[in-house]
Image 1 (tube, helix red, strand yellow):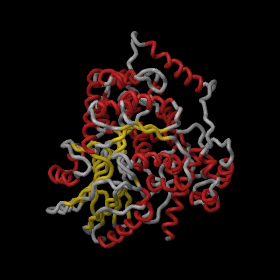
Image 2 (cartoon, one colour):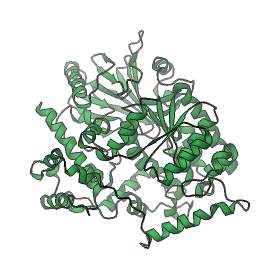
Image 3 (cartoon, helix red, strand yellow):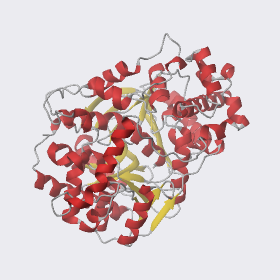
Image 4 (cartoon, helix red, strand yellow):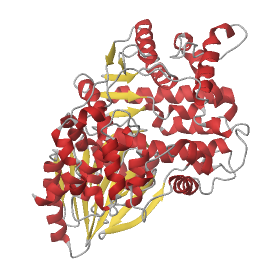
Length: 601
């Protein structure tokens, strides 16, 4: 399903809850152009599930004997071979074993919502990464749940969360359980939550990284288990989605995903996006030709403000609408030909992502330097801090240092590589990648094969020495898909483990890393194409100029008057260097004005 709305009434407030629910369904129709496929209104609870824009998604199902109901958003899989479309059997399994055991049997990218008429509870189960976003909002005499923070914000008056808004404008990500609204909060990952009598009754994690044993898998075991779990996940996916398209770029992660599907002997297609002459696109096209796979290439295109506005329906305004408009254009085309899109997100966990910050103590059992991580990876170099009023202005690096510390609480005695992976999963992948994927899921099914729990567990428990320099993936490809391993990556060297018989093939590696060093030293600049910034094109549209009038902006309550004026004036000049912040300010302002217009209507 693409979205859902659930209302859990406090005892004695069933009538008011029903009115709120019907208003919410009408709001979904107006704000997000969604109509429910089926609803369940039982007085103590009300639920509506909305199909994706392409019409896919199983309906809300109900058990005739107990009155219990179940619906799901995202793409889920069960160990008994169940997949989207088998929601009735999934409800049967819940009635047999309960929510906590059911949660441990699931894999994929999802939020499962169950209404138990026997106990008058609504139960939500989130995926292991919390990647399929779902939210809650306490209200007088009820609590509301949805896959859309925007829909919950529209149910009643709301206030901006100053911390979340600054995180979003400056970094593009909203962290922890925050949304841009104080009243709306994200459901946690890998959790079962029980709601009753208009409130959150209890919650329990069914999986945690703290349960794992880092460094416990030797090299051969890790490589073999990674391949085994990848191919098993690929089998589950192809059983439920016969017409799939898989990302294929010049890097490791999509190549590893493609390798798993190739091993099944099933037909599938590949796709890549980007400039036609980019190394990424060139390598993907050549590799697909060698493998005999149908391949689609999508050029990047500038988006009009009409396309930017459409992106709000999918992202809730909590992702850069300008960037997402381009993503949406690609997926809209693909969704007309295929059942599901597969990507390699999370695969970087197998390759020691961001571990260069740990040199020379990679793998040491010492507390992660949270301030260094915040400064070098999560906080931009020079955010436009004068944009926000001084009394609410965040010091970004100290703030994000605290977020890292809170995220990794209790893990200080584990290897610093494990702490880095945990922060990456909980901060970047849950909130940034999850926001993109949750938006796309409202159009059509999309899935990362690496989000399956057995795959994550292998990657997180493999020895750090195996994961450095992408050795784990290179050994896996060389052992099980040698043709993929031998073919060059985007930087010119193969995806093979280096040894004395093939070292000559790795000469491009020295040039690649040498170039990186020179770029960081300021002695070499990356080649830039003559591309007009989307900002300059959007400023030409009268609707954008009207929207960004400081005196009428809804965001102005948090923004410094002079800082905002200077920022907007400078953004109309070609040499402006804050395109991301400008695009996100535009995104936030349009979102808030749409909500205001809905209230007036």
